[in-house]
Length: 368
Image (cartoon, rainbow, N blue to C red):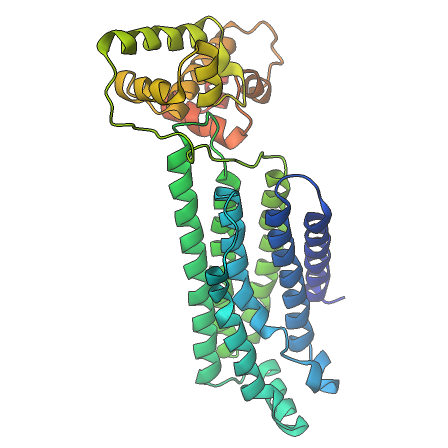
């Protein structure tokens, strides 16, 4: 059987199952899951339609061809809406945001004018041109505009993630949405290879076009699904910044600041609150009997850290201690990671290397 067809069937099956799962799962944000589920279902349909087109299946049914082409103009808005649902779960999508769907409707109109209004003979001529890789500059222009559209939405989605990541470090001890950033990075890789694939298609280099298409299908199966399945185990963040401000502009008295400083250190060193994976600024403030505003101010001004950095400094120090003093020779990096309060291996590795200069695995080997 044709390798491209086999890989397409696998990709379409995985995306369809993943999309349906996201539509029915009760875990996390229902609205966000529906948006991502719809994204994968549309991608499955687009993959299937593309291969059916290139394999000439529509030559016997030309009236059914090219209806799915504008779907790619929904990918960017769906990813952006999904990102907004995760970063600002309390905010609902408003009517103005639906203007993001305008290119999709323009795409439908363009396909109607370029293809669907023509008689069958003209449609067959267009389809044979696509299959034979003999398309004109107008198709190339449309191809370029579609990818500019996708890269724009990936850019604004990543910008939103960076904004929220920076904003929540003052309140949360874990870094969320890392997986979503990786998903977008993986999509960039897929899109770059797709651009090469498209150029090869327009240059009529069929052999290399098929090789690049196989690479795209393999990458999609390997990276995208893997990242999304990991994401299902990550909690959805609910920002607290609506009710609590990082900097009130009102300085604390020196004595009060010192008292809070001592309480924070006692809570972290003696009560070892940093080992709680879901620790937030609110939990720490409640434990020491102070307001979140004042605790945040002392951490930022007197201790010179964000809440995120302070807690992870304690976690990494504890991890080093466990590695050095371990009695069990079979102790793994993953066990230590969970014990000190991390819930993400990539985050643990990043923070450990940032503070020690080497990875946890390297540190473990040095202390064996």
